[in-house]
Length: 65
Image (cartoon, rainbow, N blue to C red; front, top):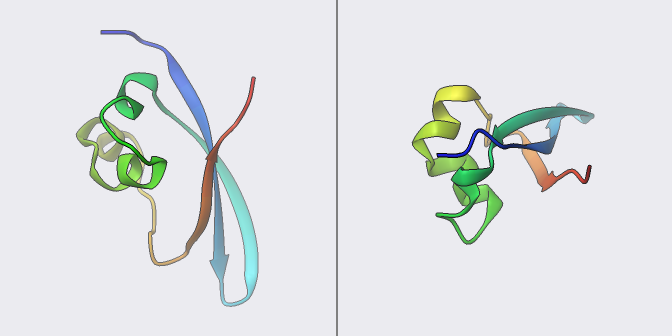
């Protein structure tokens, strides 16, 4: 299994205020999912590493570099 990590930028809204956070998840976790949001919601390795408040999540995308 690879130790490669990818950076994901998460954008949240909280009572009209927006803030972002960058997290790292295993690159191998992306392979089992068609969409990034499914990976964040369902992948056991991702769920062990980060908590994502799906009710406040506005967008999520992979960061380049």
